[in-house]
Length: 432
Image (cartoon, rainbow, N blue to C red; front, side):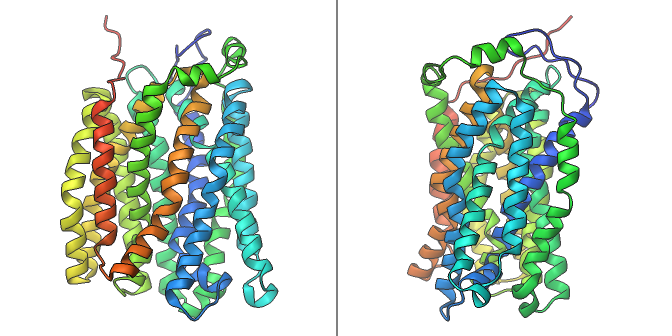
């Protein structure tokens, strides 16, 4: 991200130069927020034992994953409320508010007493914290994508915009690394009683830093654009019917694969019966591949166009899914787990960033925060929150450890059709 950006996006005058550190500030805040969601998924087994102490291993994990899924209910509400703030007041206040709410939910969940201490109030409070987190995260994606796209130098929107998806992978790496360390030095009893709480509080330590760096962001939405955005947004969104419908299908496909891959730590522990420290390594591999290949995909999309960069790797991803899971199920070794996870995650990440950038560029600036956020939130709410309980139920009902692969393959095929129907949105740099 070399040099400063002067954006000419949408109505209004040219923006002041935006330095790479400002983009980094938006990305760091986004990564910290996704760290919370990632950590919950990684420690689902331990959280289930804390709040839902049953003698049925399947029921215990299912209740924990259902609590994880409940957080998605608040996402569309957050997308509307914070998206409207982003489009009518500014990107910066929306980003600050979402980050503050996520911090409150994160600390609250880490401090909720166990079921053994306060009974039924424990899962109720845990669900309440998840709803706050879901509301905050629902309002995070739209404003962040709008900001990154608007801050990007000419010809580098793909690279800049891909940092939103890459930041989620940074969160995955951070959460998995914490999980590997804690599971290596703590007993299973300690992981259940306080280890998972420590993982959440480690994320809370950096909350003040996140507020400071987000407070330094320059605004990318200006007075003339706010006046346009203050008009009713319904007609504007209706005029975007094609990218909205295709975007919903694409995000459905991506969010399904994201949460299947985010489930790999639990899958390795619960289904493949692998050790905790080995299982957390799958999350580390998944996150590392996500960071590297999401950014690579974004940069490639600047050069070759959004459509082909999101479409071709997705086809290869579909081809690799079933063989990759077969290797994991057949051999039950760390090598098979890490190799399959890495290849599948790399191919998925190459296309994810380009697809989200394409969707964002398809929505006009005056409704971009609301439009992108709402499309993303609806798709993730309907499919992201349900993915992990569904694949657990399918695996349990069929006794087939390949169930997650079949589910991911079907949704990926549907997403490929939507990507093929998207129009090219890349803007070539002016020459001369």
